[in-house]
Amino acid sequence: QVQLVESGGGLVQAGGSLRLSCAASGSIFSINTMGWYRQAPGKQRELVAVITITSSGSTNYTDSVKGRFTISRDNAKNTVYLQMNNLKPGDTAVYYCNVRYGRSWYNLWGQGTQVTVSS
Image 1 (cartoon, rainbow, N blue to C red):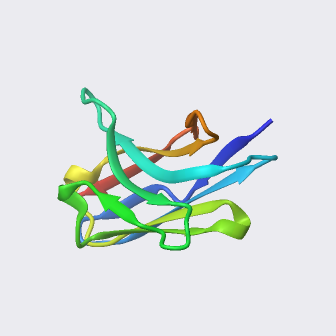
Image 2: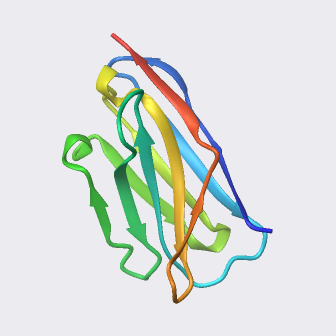
Image 3: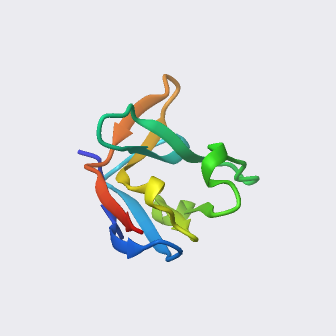
């Protein structure tokens, strides 16, 4: 059974940095994209960043994190990272790893990791 194991969340002051990691354990085939979503209390889950599992590794970010967050991946390890710099209190949320795989673009979610940014 495939699982996504996340790590790297925590408490940080505004302006600080955190790095999230998400590794897919088990056998998973034909990954299309790996990405990060977040959900703040009382808000809907939103896409933060996504990267394609192709040689180009094209990326897409939500506007509020452009220039501060960087998504990267290690295809050999089925792992995706999110480097978060210059964190703001508005970045406080539970961050979820997401993998889309297979011809039908199945969804796989991690358990979530809490990121809290204090002012």
